[in-house]
Amino acid sequence: MQNKCFWGFRSLVRRKQVDSVHVKRKGEGHHHELARKLGVPDLIAIGVGATIGAGVYVLVGTVAREQAGPALTISFLIAGIAAALSAFCYAELACRCPSAGSAYHYSYICLGEGLAWFVGWALVLEYTIGASAVARGVTPNLALFFGGLDKLPALFARHTIPLIGVVVDPSAALIVLIVTFLLCTGIKESSLVQMIVTSVNVSVLMFILIVGGYLGFNTGWVGYELPSGYFPFGINGMFTGSAVVFFSYIGFDSVTSTAEEVKNPQRDLPLGIAISLLICCILYMLLSVVVTGLVPYYALDPDTPISSVFAGYGVQWAVYIITTGAVTALSASLLGSILAQPRILMAMARDGLLPSFFSDINKNTQVPVKSTVTSGIFAAVLAFFMDVSQLAGMVSLGTLFAFTTAAVSVLILRYVPPDEVPLSSALQESIKSVSSRLSCNIQESDSKNLQSSASSSENESHNLHEIREALLGCPPIEKSISQALFVSHCAGCVEFSCFAA
Image 1 (cartoon, rainbow, N blue to C red):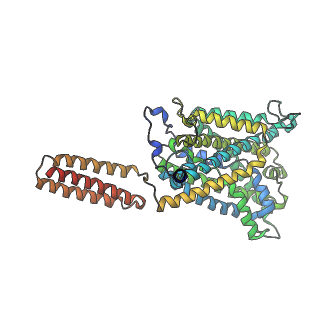
Image 2 (cartoon, rainbow, N blue to C red):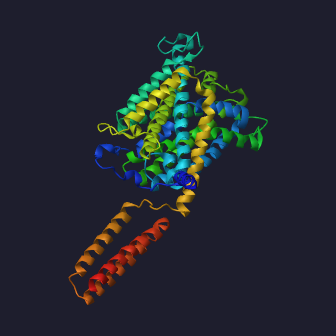
Image 3 (cartoon, rainbow, N blue to C red):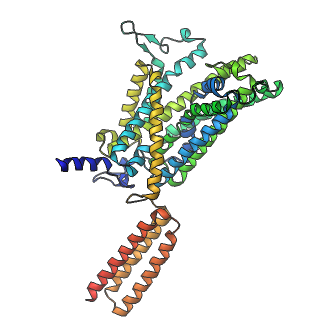
């Protein structure tokens, strides 16, 4: 009984090696690998698109009106700094452990299987509920183009089932299925569409900044002429606002789920995460400067703050442009959520925590089609039948759990490194070169006398010393590499001793 309990505990805390995902099973071919087609521009598009959702079009008015006032700009800055700390953790982990799975993969390597299982399902919950909630927001925005919810075509309008009183949303389910089909066509095609949609969304934000700035300079920025000053709710209100707007930065972590589809993950993943977060932070801060400067914070409409501000200045036509930005923001955020979820399922299936069905990769498109279709259908059904706004708080809980485990994993990876740590290509080539030279020298020593073999051993020791000095710039791997080279050298010496004897 005690042995069984001990075995169960060891199963919960066992860790996998960094490169275990790259170990191929017998009979597997190239079509079982994801296509490496993404570069830095693709990662930036995925990160910005998944981060800037339609919520920012509402969040600006709500937080400025109730928590921060004009100090909303500083709230976005503080939240951006906090998000950057998490982004640095993800960037380092993505660089050293470049495999699909995001926080699940990192926690499995550093914290063990038990916590990784919880992190994996927390991420699945986050992406599923997040995608369904985002899809549900499409219908109200589409209704603005038709003049109201009651004027939407029957195919896109919401309907109430009489017997059970459930409000179904065909538009939400339809857009989820469209995005799912797009993701099944290939990662490069998906990233191209994401880049186009994100460009439209960023263009709308730039329109708001340019036109809003022009109106502000003409009117003298009346929103900042307040008797209560720049901090109407005090410093506490500013920090409260930063806690609320922090979740507008969620989404950059979806970039790390595409690690196996990036051409140069050690370089491109950190750049993609950092640049996408920087773009989002700058846009958020500039948007809050313009909106809170055009009208006093207490006059902002909590539901449609940006549209109401432009309508108050007589720019009624801007409502359609802003609505277009909201729809594209929803679409980009939805694509980012559904893109990441199948890769989490694929990583869990590879490790045996889910059926192998989810780890299958299509040989034509080189994407996990089965897991993408499964997660897409589930999200579409959820968006069609349920109003998941009440469950949206669970998304924040899952994100907080994932961010925490990522931060802990960085500490463990730095100070208690796993058995294997990913090396740069330059170091790998150096080690291969020395290993081949050692092997050749050992074979040649079999046909030489003792004196020449001793001279060769001195040369080998000199080569080992040079490689050790070259590796001193990488502290986390210095110890393991030095030990490996020492063991290799000792093995050669033992072989020569046996031969001489």
